[in-house]
Length: 148
Image (cartoon, rainbow, N blue to C red; front, side, top):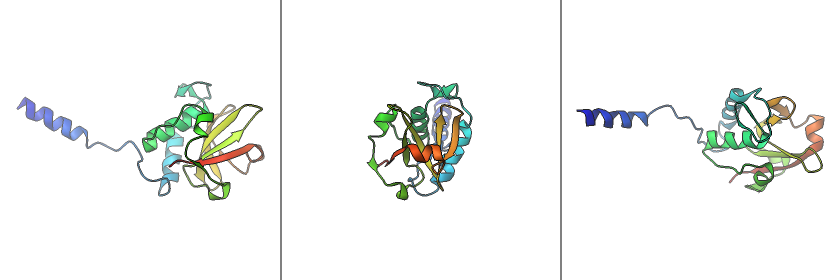
């Protein structure tokens, strides 16, 4: 009886709520990214951080891709900019990575949400949503990448 109960418990534990959005990067992805963003909104920026106590832009993107797509990304912005393939800004879709040159050697990354917006961990306000048409981001746009 004990073995049967244990087997039943193990079997049922696999039937819980799905925690990962394992859909493609087109259908329903914007709402999944937005929901994920809302769980992190306002989390402080912390260089090298990767959790709710504070995180940097590449960690936010890395966490988002792992939690929503079960897809591992490199830890740094520079390495993430080598993933997938380059796409023109006119072809951005929710889930694409957007990169910016924010200084002489500094790079920044976020995830495109749709309708011109992206989510990212900003050094000034933490995890936030911004517009690509904002003068600051428009002037610093570097490249966009789509994961395969």
